[in-house]
Structures are given as C-alpha cells and as structure tokens.
Image (cartoon, rainbow, N blue to C red; front, side):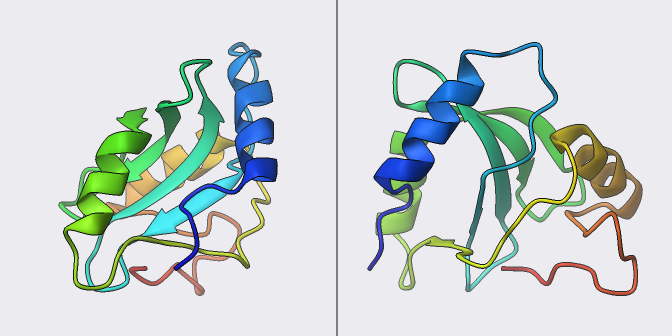
Length: 121
C-alpha cells in the first residue's frame, strides 16, 4: 500500500503552508474507496501533521478546514481497504473554487465540468 503522502508531495504541502495568504490549488486527493469520504489537501503546517483543505465526510456538508495526518492514518488503518491517494488527480482550480462548488453540490465535485462529478472515492 502506498503512503498517504509521499516525500515530494509533503515538501510541496509544507511550502504552501508557509504562504497562508494564497488561495492554493489542492495538491493531494485522498479518499475512502469503500465509503463517501474525500479530502482535497492544499497545505501542511510545519508540525508535519496538520493539513489544510476541503474535507467531505459524505454527510452533505463539505467544508474547508484542518485535519490531522496522524488521525487520517488511524482511520485508514482501521478500514478493510485503507484510504487511498488519487494518483491521477491534478487540480485545475484554487481550493476556494472547489469549496464553492462543493457547498453548492453538497459534495466535492469537479467545478469545471458539472456533468463529470467526482465519484465517491
């Protein structure tokens, strides 16, 4: 199983975390392949644990906020099929655009193509 965050992605997330005033593009998409939860992550705090991004737990209320990498690892370890990285994900918009589209749809969607919404996972 792949780690949730590889070294190159970690460095980019940490660099974004130092520039809080920017509306960063998400760098990482994590999802539960057996459930509705999805995270679009755009930054990491210097502590190496606190991530910032769009969190969608599948209850119709996606929101921008912070999540602990250690907690995501715990959740992943407790699942039959752990959380996964979407290796093909390439953000086309800043996180604010994804957040607006997600709030309107009640889940994370591709804001550039409403016909092609991201599936759960």
